[in-house]
Amino acid sequence: MLADKVDKKRLETLIEINNLINSNYTDIRSLLTHILESSTRLTGGESSSLLLLDAETDLLYFEIALGTKGNEVSKLTVKMGEGIAGWVAQNNQSLIVNDVEKDTRFYSGVDRNVGYTTSSILAVPLRMRDNCVGVIEVINKENDRKFTEEDLEWLEIFTNQASLAYQNAQSFKKVKDELFRLQDRVESNSGYHKLIHSSSMIEELLSVTEKISSSSSPVLITGESGVGKELFAEQVHLKSPRSGEVFIRLNCAAIPEELLESELFGHVKGAFTDASNERIGRFAMADGGSIFLDEIAEISLPVQAKLLRILQNRQFEPLGSSETVSADVRIIAATNKNLENMVEKGSFREDLYYRLNVLPIWIPPLRERKDDIPTLSEYFLKKYALKNRKDIKGFTPDCVDVLLNYSWPGNIRELENVIERAVIITESPVIQNRSLLLSRSEENSFSRYNGKSLKEAVNLFKKNYIKGILDDCESNQTEASKLLNIQRTYLSRLVKELEIK
Image (cartoon, rainbow, N blue to C red; front, top):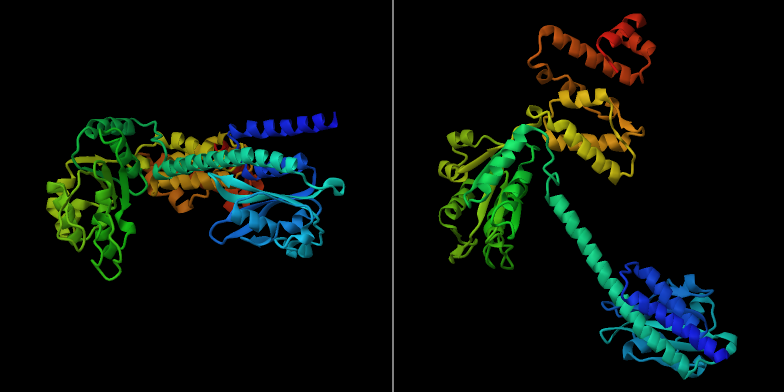
């Protein structure tokens, strides 16, 4: 009867590990701990350890160790071929040793290091695709008994199944990590992730973008820094017949002038002093797809000449090579500079400018499309509140007013930075004006008074100035009136008249 109960428990242990084989388990350490606990229970050992092989160093390290000396053991390593575990790993064979003192393969160094006495060991290789990747050791059979061949058979069966579960868990984790990596790559490469907008100006631009996407002609995107030029370039590619092909991005200003030609067109071995290997350039990589050249105005005149050739006949020579390479690439360029002025000054080729400017897109600055500011602000608020695990619902009305009236010289990029910072420092359910940390000089810049009468401009200045002082005084009107050098009753009247909240 007792044997039947033992076998039933062993079968239950096997069923457990079988269930894990087809699960999407990705917590590797928890799985290995479960495997080791089951191995100990299956064979009736007092303690156990699971060693994994580092193929580069040929060292076995204790990934999991159970028993009274588990913590001490986990700090040690064993050389391949050293001790029972090292022999099992090297020979990829199981082993029973019921009297370690009589076995020359036993290494007593571990016992000496942790203050433990080993009398018997049951050791089985953990295999993946027939290769040993680790060893499961069960130490000292309970009640001073000996390990049996039956113990070994059960442990081998279990370990074979456990190896599959371990392999699958690694595969699931790899897929999961890759998904996260790709998601992060898509997000980091997507500028502002989505074309968030409410303004009719951007809606019209999107309509234009869709119309020009079907062509393979060059596109020149212009606009101030931070308006989202890369995002529009991405839209051109994604809506084009080339959307299934590669989209290569390059910030020309980020590459030193002496390296830019090699980066764009590649080079052959020995083309210059440090050219120890052949290099494929961005145009060759983009063959069949699109290439986005940001900060196109930063390209030197010699490189401009090679770029012109690609635009004319889709051919180029890698640096140091006389071999002509063809590349079917759509060029999408962008700049925040005035290329016409650069052409007049001779710093940008006129023929290249006209070749690039076939399909122009100008993106207006954020201050000219204020309808987008609340929408973008809400988007960034949700994004960074989630990232920082904060429950922030929105903005106070005066905060929205400041956002709308600020000139945003850095455009969307600056808006995103301001909202991220505000989310981080805000402790209340809504973001208040003082959390924006906008510079007063910008906040009260001349642009916000455009189109207003003198009286309206004066009142707006008063409102913003008084609001700033009140924020600094945490809405204490007595303190604020002292700083303003006016009576508190007059300040109260101004707050009411100017609708300061």
